[in-house]
Length: 218
Ligand code: C5P
Image 1 (cartoon, rainbow, N blue to C red):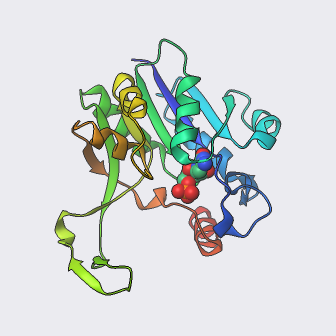
Image 2: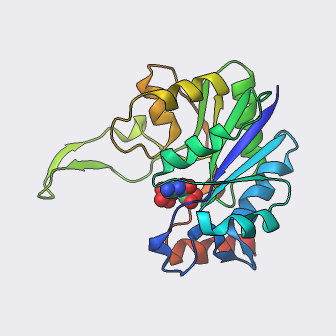
Image 3: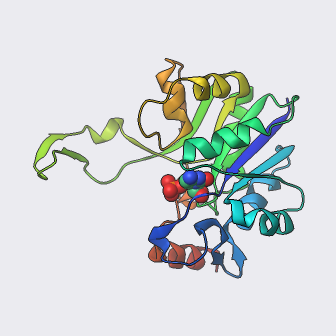
């Protein structure tokens, strides 16, 4: 099996209140995208790394990630993943898609996802049980429905796919905003397996998340 990882790092990250795109903001002295790439590659199962970055950051990304193929992202996350898919070498069978914003996702999580895909699951996502009670609300803020917490999972990345499945999912006509790739695979009617996630794979979105990640590293 040849495994590739598409590391999406082309978002603006406006909620982090930085002048740089989020993936290039420093965490303990190194950009988030460098942390994320190091942990993706550390387990030794990823053969190819494709980093998807904003157009103005290609040279900087190539300097930071000399082993990666660096490509330019798109307006949405789905567009950025599609740009990464288009850059994959022919021999790749398994594709991981990972958010640079989940910079501390550990190598053990990467291995667990790859292993589940290699065991024959076409789509695998890490997920954590939800501890808050989650309610659906309408436009006025009134509660419509309380969801059954026991059946909910907060889904993370890296998400793993058999390459043909992910390419079929991305070839579908767009149907609204998709915040992950598993959502596109679900639209095909293909089974998506959830494996245990890891609190370290938190998405760094706000300055408080960045401070929390710094503490986790200390
Ligand atoms: O915006 P959000 O936090 O959901 O982004 C998740 C990941 O997708 C981030 O790593 C971000 O850099 C990436 N992204 C991208 N291209 C976009 C939007 C987001 O690569 N157009």
